[in-house]
Length: 210
Length: 344
Image (cartoon, rainbow over all chains, first blue to last red):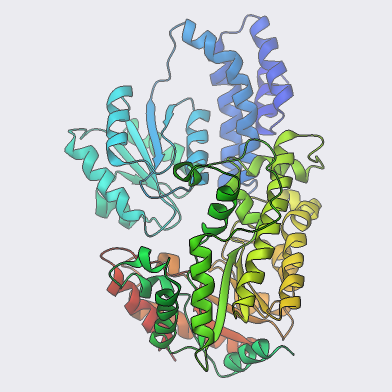
């Protein structure tokens, strides 16, 4: 197994110490930081995402894998920044106003990061204007809105309306959460609905690369 | 047998049905948030809800933020920070519960209900594990690490989780006792976070040790405290569960167990004693969807009731969780609740 494959496997299995060590070894061997991200980390997260979609692994394993990737990124991010390398796409994400639940939102953020998408995580209970400000400030191509409660779903519509009213008509809007459906996404003018965190990567890339 | 358990079994035998729907009724009033702080008015809402749903079960509001609020007040966390506050190190143990205004109102409301002949006064609390998940910013990772055999001595994040569960359990023990002393004959203890988001089925396939330590052991302490206070346990978990989790809940000897719509109750029934009523589990979290019309809900209720009759397990048809009022959707949601109450 090559060191790059070994790194992917370490990330997938959530072995953060191994992953960090392998990342350092790859850097020491002269591999470019972006290559390590794209050929080592992203395949690892992609593999665990596929297993998640197929119910072979569950949320805890995903988080452990993400933790391993995060350890590697601590080494890589300064080097990527120094070389002026930015992710191809940037997305803003947050749980809508009135809702404090963050597990689903965190999982989607983690999977997007795992696909080498720049993620601006606004946290929970985010008012519509904050989404608008962040999209503008970071030139984000997409935004993810999360809600767990039926009582906070209407805040998704308010947020979608605020984004469109701010003239951000080309920003792709994805929504997700336990009570959310594809029909609801259509009803409130969102571009897509993500059934789970792993699918959210496919949905986002499909929208951005259409 | 405890008379409350006997009453629940009799209701089940008569094909009774009732939603956890007090929130819907409360929010038909002009000042719902103020009413939550007024025990007399809140008690009136519980009585009104029971009458509206034609049930003797006076279900309280499922407000699962009360206990976190109480604990953090006791620890001196400033009010504006409470909602989003998380422990970064093991919290201190709090031995004496200082009831918050909401807790006092909840207990006063139970007293009001207890004065009404024919009603079953009920209390409500979050469970220790679910409370912990509100106190820690990333609880899933340390729970997983604990499942690999790490303890608080090995990992600081696991230490925070262990202590948060213990601190929360002590507070909950006091709160359920307070409600029982106010007259609650059954307490609904909600553990929605005890599910396969927080516990990996892969890990549980090897051992349920972490689940037993973090969920079941605190629940058994609560069950013992309720027994000594003369109140029955109603256990609620609307999360996605493994069969092993359900089998463990069946050992709690709860008077009633309420599970989410992901469960096939007629199959789960086999692992519960006949002295535990099963409750639920219509998909009320999806009632907001226009696809779930009252007619569809009516048919789902009839199907579930039929399957449960065939299972011959004591059963009360109801909601998978609290039916929350949504602005602009109040009438639609109520019509769906009423449709399942009236299905054959």
